[in-house]
Amino acid sequence: MGKDRVRPRGAFAWALALPLLLAAGCATGGKQAPAGPLPPRPPLAEGAVHPRSADLPVDVLVESGRASAAQGNYGVAEFYFSTALAKEPGMEPALSGLGEVLRVQGRTDEARGAFARAAEVAPDSVPARIGLGRVHRAQSRHDESLRHLRRAVELSPEDPVILEELALTYEAAGQEAFAEPLFRLAAEKTDSARAWNNLGFNYLRQKRYADAVAPLERAVALDGSDPVARNNLALAYGMTGREDRALSLFEGTVGKAAAQNNMGYLYTLQGRWADAEAAFNRAMEINPAYYVRAKENLDRLGQLIVEQARENLEALQKEGGGGR
Image (tube, rainbow, N blue to C red; front, side, top):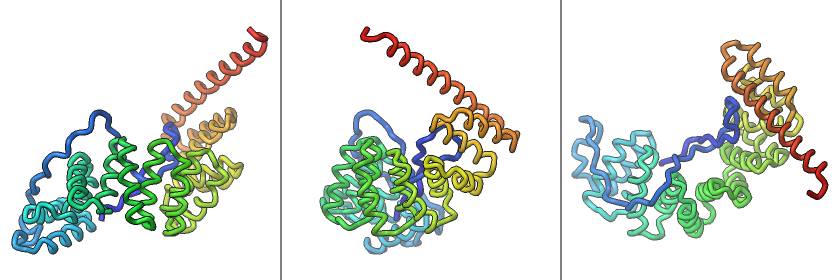
């Protein structure tokens, strides 16, 4: 229940359809709010739940909540978990289940309250620790997220989900090197496209483009239809001199015009201004409707060229100035 969907981890804000990865919650600043009371049971349409749900045993209510959440019926799942908690307020599985349902709906503060209560009644609850790690990361409380996820690793050191969550928090905190071995362990344990993609993108974040190729190739081999892994692999190819393969992947994922736009951005990253300009112009020629996006990138390219020229001039002036 509560499996995270693939989330964007785009490092390239002004290029179209460039790399994506796992979805992070919205970051909010400010002082942490108290956990507060749990939300009331939501109203549901007639027939949406068992007609005599209040008479069901709490363990049946919890299982019904989990089944509903697994099907994406979060309102129904919330009802079942809340009904269980009305009968047994300190039931950890119901609290953790409710917290996860609230989290995937974006109700982060309420989710944190449910997970915090679950951790209070059951300090060794792995679901509660994972949930607290996720919601604190979503609110940019990285130290708190790390604290809970490290405890989860202590409780279940072989769980690849926990390893991945801890790695994501390290990345969110700007500590990509700490995340790398955790992503690798998760990939080796699961051999899933998602996990190898995570590792490959970690290398991209570290600008270790050659190292990113192998895990991203594995991700694409496992799931060739995933545009996220394909775009990430195209970036790795483009940054390691395999431009034909990068272009082919981009074209198969986002189309010819967008592929040229993305290639233009790759050339920009490499300081190949003329190649970048040519690629952006090709994007507009292939699809005139693409003019606005490619023109924006051309304008940005012009700004970068001017900035680079200014930096070069300043460097030359400093060199010519001797020791002054």
